[in-house]
Image 1 (tube, rainbow, N blue to C red):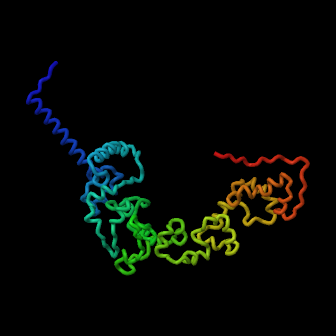
Image 2 (image 1 turned 180 degrees about the vertical axis):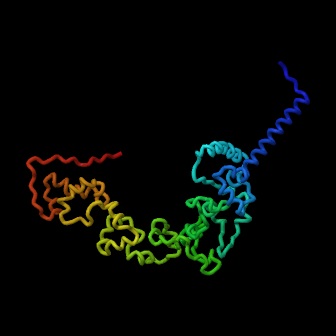
Image 3 (image 1 turned 135 degrees about the vertical axis):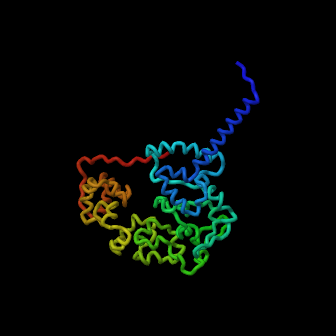
Length: 346
């Protein structure tokens, strides 16, 4: 069988190819609109918020796909599974989107961002943030979708984010210090001078867990700022605190710790034994160790503490009795063998 190319045949092929290409283009464009996205019930809150935002004229794919035709087609291929996922309900909840800096920079170019931006009494310079590699979503994850974004994923341009660098300590590659001088950003006196976190009711008890010391020191410049509230206790706790904090507890009482910790519950997470140890603890500690496990002992002690008595006792060495304040001791008729820890080297 032989085929011949004819003008009519070529015309039909060209028309078919044109129809296919146009059809694909129309389909790609149609599936990139908010109207199409809102056909899925799970996306309706996001689309509703988008329509009320300043980004309501921006196509969905302009934000949610990396710039370039290859990445656009890749995103479309990945999205082919979405109809089935929506029908079966087998998709991640809540729905979390992601926007790369490259997508934001399609519109927010250097001409817009490399100059100070002032709004509501706050002046921001994005140039250094972009050059340092900060993600736009670190401060602006609610853009376009507002409160439809799940609470745990919402980020805002807060003072706490600025103080990560602007703490009078951070230096850029050129050696310039990022100052925490207030009027650098606050163009109105006393406007927004207190970070939002400080206004939360539980901030006095949780700031040590969620705060970053370098950001605190941007405003709290005195070395006594922490200890003034923490009853003279060193804050943050030094590296030796685990083994030495008992002295502070004896001197100041548990109330000093209770300012941050629930002393009824928190202390027993490590101290599952009486603290401080009672006078008869040397004689009773084997039973306690058997009950709670020796791991509890090693929260404070090292193996050498055990060996000071147990290894020397097994060998009948009288020097061990100095730890027992002269307690009487006699060697057993047949000393029990004690195995010493084996140390292997690589």
